[in-house]
Length: 259
Length: 245
Image (cartoon, rainbow over the protein chains, first blue to last red):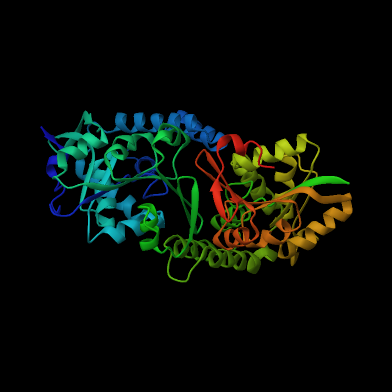
């Protein structure tokens, strides 16, 4: 029996002298939910059975109402369906599928976040930390030049997935990999990022959900919201607006309160 | 004289562009010629990949060009069928801030207006769905069961379009609202006491900053209201945003 993560080189390139910066993926780096696109593709290809009506109906309700409760309800149903479909599937088939979906969807990124990733690449270890399965994260994280990635692990036996999976607490998972230098930045968009915000020097709430904003209200952290060709940095209630192409050095200085 | 609230639709009330959705579907179904689907896909990917010098506006121009080169060959019956399915899909995919503002102002006696670059028929369907009082869209002339290819684009001059509605309904700009998301909306925002740059692109952002207009951004389920106070913009808290007017 083998945890999938043990078959991958995670954090091979970590430089123990450099500080770390970590990023959530869904909604923070990417403008979409990677697992959703992946699941749809697997259904279209007949690798998974067709999406149940309950998942499609939940999505329609979320699109109509745009409430966080509806989004969560849709996501929970989708993840439940995904987890239900995984046992017995051939690992290499799902790896190839991840590569194909990554190739199709790789451009749907937030320019602000990818700009910061590029800006920090030489000076920081870059961690992608997500609840999505590591084999799915791998092509997306590799494409963006992350130093290391941490995601959920799925147990494999004889080249096929079993029904055993392990999701992560982001901060605990990061702690297993950290190497004594500081976590300078964490960017995330949901409450699942809270534990990493707690331990990062510069937590950045990127296009945060209302639940995240409310849960972090007392911390008075930097909010970055991006839409169309703009990015707005809110720090202590003051507002700084950036237009594309973004001056990332200036934006990063603004996040750190040095501009 | 009655107060009014004038809304842009695509990107302001509706989360996506209705015109784009219709053209996209016509192309996918082969009504705009054999190459249209591929041409639009390539243009969309250039924009999505943020290729140097290729903006959303460039994609939009490619979309309009593709549509208008073939519009005379599209049966209005086909167009109407596609339009109906697009409306069904998108009519409720709206921004809650603008939807709720429209409902509130309507209940307070404001005349609700919509001015959009989308097809007049699309604009009418959405405007009626949200109980607007009047609207202006782009008119593609029909004659003898076909589109002639001639059009009247009111959104090229939203100021003139709004003036025509003001005159028609005897409205007052005092205490009135205008809400839009792009530079083409700026002329109608300049005409009213309560301009709101909603999810503005950078060009409208800059105009709003120069004029000190309220800027409202809706992301996920959060609405941020940015208001100029003294010389800088600050984020209003929830209690202040309940009285955006």
